[in-house]
Image (cartoon, rainbow, N blue to C red):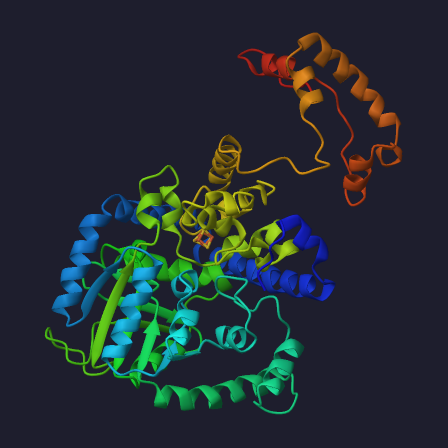
Length: 475
Ligand code: SF4
């Protein structure tokens, strides 16, 4: 469950078994991602840059593309609604379900619906909701929350899942993955057939054709919109791409970045409801409604953090982040976790930015998140800017026990003292640092080795780099 503690405190109390499960669940896709991109592209950077440009262009002209998408979707026979915030989005869904007499809803995975807490709202209104993505289904029966964008149960192992299935009457304890999957399939198929409405998200929406693109590995999105009469698509306004041809760029990057697959098993292009005035659609729901949700995105678009809206929710930055791997997704106390969440979650909390203002501090700023991001989002830069903002707004404070920066500031502003300190630092090589009786240092060095101090001075090093100089001084 969501922790009210700060990330480091939560990480300290995380059971070893959960930490190991998260480590393994993020380590393997990171390797597969690297191998898939290297095998298929050699250097994937040009493709990442192209994806970033397309997304940035879309965001820079979002009003135009939203209008285009709206008129195309309507021409395709879909109804289009716009929701400013979570409350209006939830009210629209409830109204639609009531008007169409829907009592049972099947849902495929959607981070937006997690963000606006749609399920509890529908249940409060007497509507049964069934999550049909296997991971989300397990989250639902456990009354848990997802801890990863694409692997919501990355914090659980198969023994945990087998116990949940046994408790819910889905069969005797059996932790064989195939048995678990077969039991879930049998249970969910009955729900698919009985459901009155299906709710999905959208990975992309083409403004040119109005096509809704859904990617899954389980085919559950397809079932969610095939049997029910009503299909509701809930999508963030940033999910647009200008043209169908742009989808080739994003579909090639999304599955490889997230799980190292060339493509997800199912990629669906939904043209509209069954009765499509522009012709061609002979299956699908009788009625389709697309709800574009803002919920804080326009404010981000108008800020210095707008690049974060390029995110295509691949989860690669979560998989590679050393803090996420140690702390797990629940440590972030938000729908979006890891590096993407450390930027996006506090921004979406407006005007309560302070509640999650500590998240940008949960990073070593190693840059790995930017290196793996398929749309080249400069996450580390944003984290630094958000830390600065949090400090200026008084939203974060130094943690008790954090070493003061004052000694460093004293030396850095006095050149003579700095030079003397550098001379003295050579002596540190003679003393094993682990034996120094400085408690914060002792704890920090408990699991790390510092390199030997090599001396040298920055100014002389720079002089050596000037034309005609040599570059030999140690840094
Ligand atoms: S920020 Fe980049 S790497 Fe992280 S989930 Fe979004 S697209 Fe993927």
